[in-house]
Image 1: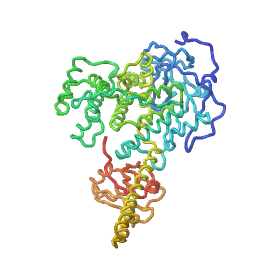
Image 2 (image 1 turned 135 degrees about the horizontal axis):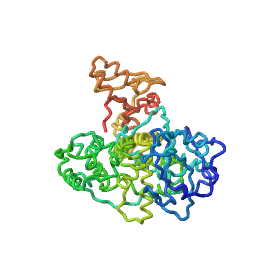
Image 3 (image 1 turned 180 degrees about the vertical axis):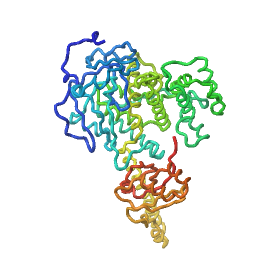
Length: 570
């Protein structure tokens, strides 16, 4: 391939745009600015390599441009107006699964000088959830400090992010109440629209064809319908039970099976199992022991492919395609993806999180099953992003490439993708405070109108009494400033007043309750599954990070109650 694609040698600085000095400006607190050059405005091509990705490797992005299908079956969209960029890739003998040949260590193939010359991203980059993504991107574009990167499939150049944990800790999507998560979804969609608008991309939410799903069975049934049925058996379930069974079946004996998601099982058996699952699963009469892991993998793909609407919103794909064509840094791509995930319905997001966790278990056994991160992404993308509308071949290729890249990013950043950005939580608190203020004002307005009415009708002496009975401001709690009362209704020590200081964390309060309840072994076991919750005030319900500093949380929500209770299982 090197001989076939041999071109004139170009200066490496023209390709990668190495800057002479690091950027000094910042977009906000804890925000790294990104560089960019005019040369990088060329559309990059997708380059397929067979490199394996270690767990601590850095991650890059992939886009679509001017490449024809290669010998390994990967493809990119031909573009007549784009310029092919010759990538300088170190030659390392590799096995078919991407691992290096014995005697050829990877570290010898790529020296430190190579990393500096090729502008490969550093091993880890700081990522902040405190500042609005759209504000960060808008400011970076104004200062012309937005770094660009080419979309390649070499996993060693994919950026690794270190999320900056604030004093409020990190919040999972499941740590907030359903009402607050509904606000998060709306705010995320607004933020995503502003994010794309900063690049001049219009986020068109094209209405997809609405396919009415089945009301019973397994395949072709909406996720919400399946969950309603499953919650009659387990009230706390978040992922459909049949989906969990598929995961368990593959994990039992299929994680090391070569090509587990590339090969199809016995067609006759798959058809038989599908019919039996539709008829018997909800009645708990289906016998899972007779199913092979290959059939389970085939039906797992079919389960998502036959959903009434795709797991991920395909209507956002055109905006992502436009974004990828601009070749932004992977950090920008992650931010757009993060907002899209936060805007997903609860059922879709929970299923996606379980699915990505499962696929990372498959990828961890790549040396035996030959299923790399890119292989999984390519195989599963058509099942997770699909549209029943008709598209041209060119549009299908764009959709396939972009969807595969999005799945790749989700798999790589699976550990941080489901964290709720703190700037969205701050906006939810403000919305709740505004609602509280409105509720306080409404009674006084109503009483004022009632008083005016009474004054017009009659000068009754009871009017003054009515005014005296108007509710005063909420009485200050008898608990001193900086002291909170924590309730633990399920423990033997049900309540405790705790003096807070700048170093008091949620785990410290849990430890105090564990010490007080350490008289019996059963209590020691019970406290292990307990978490501290912030309830009421300007938040519905918030399961606090064990590393959250409680005094800081108390200051932004002094009206909250503090409760220790079990964290619901997924």
